[in-house]
Structure formats: C-alpha cells, structure tokens
Length: 240
Image 1 (cartoon, helix red, strand yellow):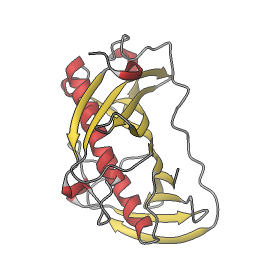
Image 2: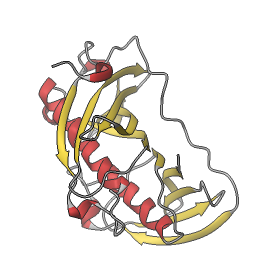
Image 3: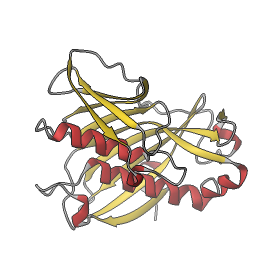
C-alpha cells in the first residue's frame, strides 16, 4: 500500500489517558513523543538508527515546528507518517503527518537533525550514513524550521531543576522534555498552544538549574532557557 505525500514509514498509535490535558486534548509534548518514537522506528528499519551508537554517532534534534489543526483526544487512534525530506548543509530534514481514523490531517511537523560524534562533539555530514533514496542530499524542503529571533519585553522569569525523568538515553534532557517545560510554563498564563517552534542550542544535563524567561507578545510569546547564563533553547508558541 502506497503512503500519502511520498512518506516512507507509518505507525498507528492510540492516545492514552496519560497523554492528555485535564480538558481532554493531547499534550504537544506527548505528540512529540510519538514523533520521536516513529523517527527511531523508521531509522532502525533502514539501518541509520541505534546501530550508529556502535560508531559513537548520534542524531541530535536541532529544530522542530509542530502545527496542530485539531487536537487528538483520549482513545483516538492516530496514523502517523514520516519520511526524509532531503538535506541542506549539515541538516537532515524529517517530516511528520498525523491522520485521524477518518484520514483527516490533524497535525504536521517538520524537523531538522544533526549527525554528531558523541565523544568528539563534532558535527558530521548526514549523507555519510543516510540512504540517498530516503534523504536526497541534492534536495531540501520548502518548509524548513526557522532560526528563532526572540524579541519584546520580558514578562517574567522562573527557575526549574532538571529531573531524572527529563533525561534521554544519552543522559541529556530529551527534546520532548523542553516542550513539556514550555507547555507547563504557559499553561499558568492560560495558554494552550496549537503551534510550537523550538530551537535546541546546547546540552542540558541532570541536576542543572534552568532559568526560563517568557518574553514578547502575550498571544504569541517566546520562551528562552538558560543554564548559568548560557542559552540552551528558544521556543515560540502560537495558535492556528
């Protein structure tokens, strides 16, 4: 069976009770969890996933933009598609598409990834490990996650400490944990965004204290995270 829009891999998920807000909509961070899971499944199926660890290589998510048309709810069955969308410089692009049971598009996302040597902390060319049939090195998508440029007045600043549950298998804060921090921070302002753009800028580790600064327009604010003054991530939220 062919997949829509030249996607290369699919997986079906059911939204669990633990993945929704009290009002019943799925959390953005939980949707991002599913994107992370299907990305690994696809990469493993084609030989450029966990096997790279044997070469001391890893994929680091650099940027992602998620746009939700209609939030899935508890017990909804989701059909998620993913596929390579080419390369540009050091970036390899991966897109995601989410269908409900009626084959309606409920969400999309585009992400850019870097291939990193774990010990040397060196960025490598993605085409050195990616199959060109899936990630054409001579092609790049029209939709590319942008470099954020936060601006506007500071609304407030708060502190959080990185917990063990925030960490991934590399002992760094998981990319979806940052999204959860953003959701929690803006929820107290009564904001439940349907769009998020996030730039991952530096490693963040267990036990570190992260300063979260909310700034900009109240309807579409930015959030910056710093550890000892060093910028580790930036995000912007919005509603469609």
